[in-house]
Length: 241
Image (cartoon, rainbow, N blue to C red; front, side, top):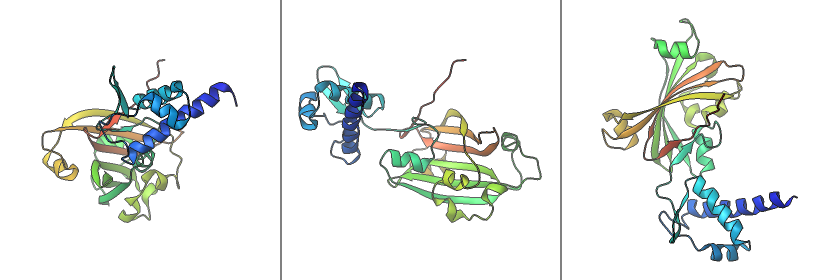
């Protein structure tokens, strides 16, 4: 094992343990962490290793530093979509050490398919498209409402109850998911969404349009989701041509 790799393993181990303590409530929001000296002594590593671990958690918006005062737990911690690639809600929840719950509000074929959805999925008028509406919760707190549209071929034989878990896991039994294009806009909370997400009418909300594709560029699903702006943030990688 090289010296650089060994150092990285050490500070990642420290970072993972600090993050775990935050998730378990040992370190609570706005709490000041022990000093670098005390943490180095506890973990039996150098102060430089502790400093690198802290810097990594600062980059992940989990900790923040106040000059001359120390390091604190950030409050509140938002769920960051896209920070580690294309993941479903259930997968992202596990990554943050949280428990996800899914409530299926509706699952049915739609008679009149909006042109926008039909064009996005590249389907003709004869193809039956299903609408799936779900509310997603983290630790029993409502986070997002999804309106998902898929061709009948991907959901044939499934019932509403089947969608109480990971949608990606279900779809990957039939097709390989490769990437997703997203468009994000800020909107105001409507009365309907206020009731579903337990937020105030007129408050900020993130509306996300996304189309998910196979590796061959074939669209699989169209997703129109509404995310609580106080609980969610998005991270994207932009490539310069």
